[in-house]
Amino acid sequence: MKPTPNRLATSPAKAGFSATPTFDPFWAGTRHGELRLQHCQACGSHMLYPRLRCPDCGSVDLDWKRASGKARLHSYVSPPVPASERAGDPPYVIAVVELDEGVRMMSKLVGLPPDSTALPADMRLEVVFEPRGDEMLPAFKRAGS
Ligand SMILES: [Zn+2]
Image (tube, rainbow, N blue to C red):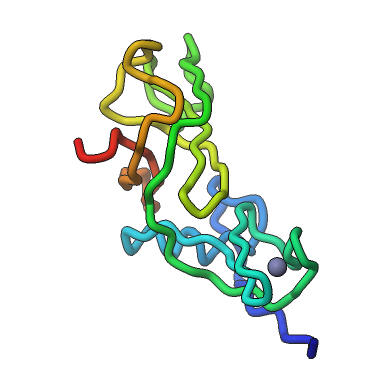
């Protein structure tokens, strides 16, 4: 396999939204209403957080693809106090969702109460985007709602 140049973003990440510059394509996607995942061109795996090598096959032949935005609820928590200044006022639900591409990510649920009867395991979800400052943050709502 011939080596390919690292095509990940090299510009500085915006303070407060990304710990590494390699998240830039992700945030560029959210600004366009797209959930983007890093993708391995060698084996087809998707990944999040961004990496320099595929964790499944070791390839550096990585690009970014638009995800379906469809997911299922894996787990959740409803913190009694704000988790951060950006989190907003409780009650809200922070969830780990599993995207249909096989990637798990932490996000916020919207339009759903922090009640176990409203949040069954494997509930189908779809991405929405919420403005937060200059950025659009991905969140998830019940699919079809
Ligand atoms: Zn791979």
